[in-house]
Amino acid sequence: MRTAIRLAIMPALLLTMSAQAQQKVPFANGVPVAPTGLADQVLPAGPFDMRTGEGQDIRVTVLARDIEYPYSLAFLPNGDLLFTERTGRLRVLRGGKLDPNPITGGPVSKYAGKSGGLGAVHGYMSLIVHRNFAQNQLIYFAYSKPLDATRHTVAVARARLVGNALQDVRDIFVGENLRGAVSLAMTPDNLLWIATGADAAAQDPMSLGGKVMRLKDDGTVPADNPFVGKAGYRPEIYTMGHRSSMGLAVHPVSGAVYLSEMGPNGGDEINLLKPGRNYGWPLVSLGRTYPGPWQAKVSEPTHAGFEPPLLYWMPAISVSGLTFYTGDALPKWKGDLFVGGVRYGEVPGTGRLDRILLNDRLEELRRESLLGELHQRIRDVKQGPDGMLYVATDEPKGAILRISPGAR
Image 1 (cartoon, one colour):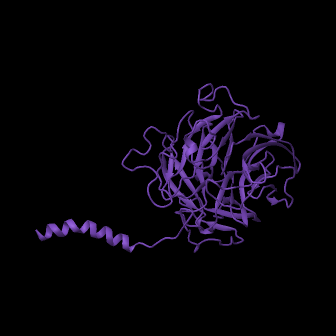
Image 2 (cartoon, helix red, strand yellow):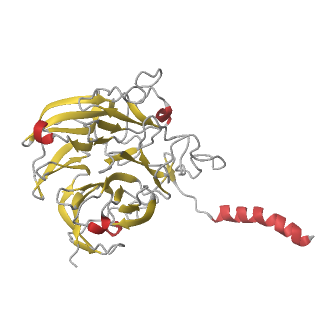
Image 3 (cartoon, helix red, strand yellow):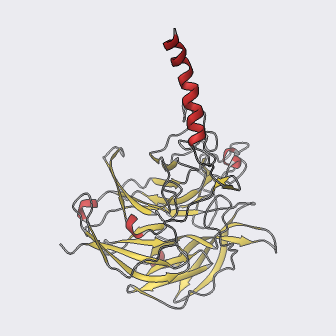
């Protein structure tokens, strides 16, 4: 009898002891205050020689440094590397050397210096080059557009890049009271994809927040978009139910579009975009809210009735840009998906680049983390025309890195 009583008391006692043993974590605006023990580390000069899991030894070279929050990378046909800075500048590396003069003629943007979150106010964000750039000289970039002294939204500008200046600059998309990150891609049919983030608005079919839009390269709506002519839906929408859209990538063979979507405290996702599908945010998630509880009720099927992610992270790496590698310079990585992360497990100073090996059915076989020892926020990754990988670090003194084959 006494044994039975003791066994009945133990679960409640253990729960009480566990609760008493936990630290009282400070919060700010509903989010745990981040630790600083690994944050703000200076990137050494390099180069860095590293071993990797597949035996693909690499050398990481710092091509440019002390750049103010580089955000997005895009290559021109001649090999020049364009990139945006969150402070509202467009820059270029020519022959691997940084041009000290920013590209002129871009629109004025709003920048609030906040590094992340759904309400982040980035100056210039995602950047792409038109697939017919050699003929039309067009580039596209997302930015935070001031509306007046106190209001702003997100927009996508189109411009012709002539020398070191932008000409014929025109907004082809202006959001309606939208905030946070915007991601861009262009598919082989020259259609422009724009991804935005949101919370409750992600489930509102009349809002463009938390959606992926599919447009023609002049900003008009294609007639075959999934919601064209459907009452109660914006015709621009291709998919909905997205939280924080940090990167878009086009598969080099299928032409399918993939979205990296930042979750809250866990639940980062890579989503394969399918026409008209709902990806669930904020109703479903594989992550927790910042105070600790699960975002979705764990007693219910997490993605029942919604499109599940292709890949996810728990804890989160705070996913950013992504790319499929198709080059010959790093042959053991051919076909792999690379995904940037600005921090792991809510700890600053733990950014990394994840390499994911997928089979021919896009099922994950292996996952490897790279560059973590540099303690940098990895914001974007792109393959260059030389078959190397190029990385942007999102730091106040950020850098552009090149990943090439190692010495042995």
